[in-house]
Length: 302
Image (cartoon, rainbow, N blue to C red; front, side):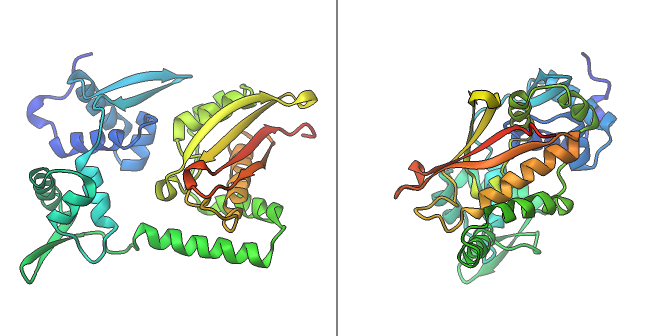
């Protein structure tokens, strides 16, 4: 399909912003999602998607009734990674530190520092003989602060209420009122007619964030399906390499909250009841060998 926008009026920043958004979504992004998250009209997004497709910067894959768009560029995204690193360092960072910590050459870091400065996403200050770079977004705390605070909260609740996992499933279901997480209407209609194992698979493919903290804790999520005797098909969500599975069960209520959220999302979006339970907890000395499994099945009583 040929572009409908004349090259002389192409907004390069807009093209780059859409491309950068897609790069940050390894599970793909729909036109509707990009439109909502970035505040552009669907027509505008569609036109620039056509441009990016023509220049082979992205490609599409149809999943159900939706077209998902993926970056054709494999590997890392230096601009995104450098900005994220600076955001997480409120006291400022030097080009040398970014280069060492992120593994990019100084020339590469300098190039993207200039780009980010032009976009006014960062600013610099000279302190002594050093130039320090800061995020222009000031109203935030570093990610590890959130993780530490949340882990402290989880550990305190576990100590105070040692055997009340179901209470925290209730918390997970009810906290959805404050979380901006919704399906497109067409996707909700599609999901109403499919089996639970296919739903969870698509749920993961589309959003990539069954675990809402994955931006922070960065766990690995595996999906599998097994037959559970007379209870039919059960889908298993396995969390590996999570911040909340580090040689202790102190933070285990995090996964009960996630189980409650999954139940709540299913009920809210497609008006069906499922049961999501914490099934297997394996804590090892090495975080990489620790895992927890959640089961998902249709509620037979509903």
